[in-house]
Length: 307
Ligand code: PMP
Image 1 (cartoon, helix red, strand yellow):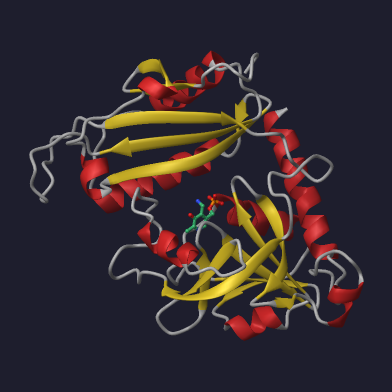
Image 2 (cartoon, helix red, strand yellow):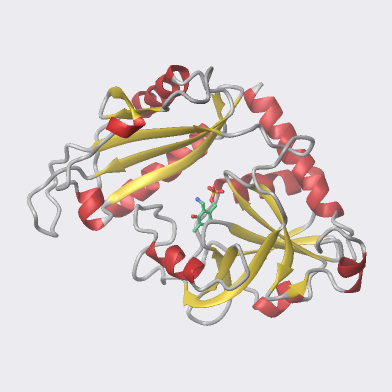
């Protein structure tokens, strides 16, 4: 935005409107029931990062909800691009929401959908390994009692407006800033809004998306980067104990990119080395090297795709 004091403009059902006037109907199912799909994206240098992957996941969410919104990808993308241009934003946070719209007050959805489509944007610095990350400090991660909703109840791959699982988990935090949710059997699933990775003997581990884990776009890019640069990867089911003893732990999501975990359940991550080297943890046996190499590879991907 040229003038930071200017009000941000959102895109609501085809119109660009000031954020304070961007309203939806009280009868909208997205409001009444959380009956809506969304994506959080980032734009770097004015270009949306990993658009196809986000559009694919949005489609999967809509399929899971049986929400036939009838809008093309080109249409959705152009709403995002218009909103970025209207705000003169290059490095930005973008959220695209599609609800099942206003329907009579009954739970069973009508197959005829007049969707409500909203694009939110906000300025977000470029980040990256040599820039300012959006997070201030390494994450303080805490295991919480709230369990990840099983796939049999609500598929974790559906990114819907209903974030109560993550909200309840975050409310349990004592000193932490991200909650670690386990599945019903006590295996690590994911953070409230992030995927989890750990490094052990230079191998990268992450919970499998066969469990109740949102298939994060950042997670996928990190796995592709690992493959490209030759970091061995294992996807599986792990207990919180494995994270506790790992050489390093980090979290991923679209806004944070790769965020180191400084402490886990009150202890430094990475054993003896972590406490003494002043990095807030996450510099155990591998000295944070795998995380740094992956962060560089991620950065290169942003650079190649968006600049
Ligand atoms: N898990 C959950 C529950 C999330 O809300 C998010 C954020 N969308 C992620 C993982 C990370 O996904 P992404 O990398 O696509 O942002």
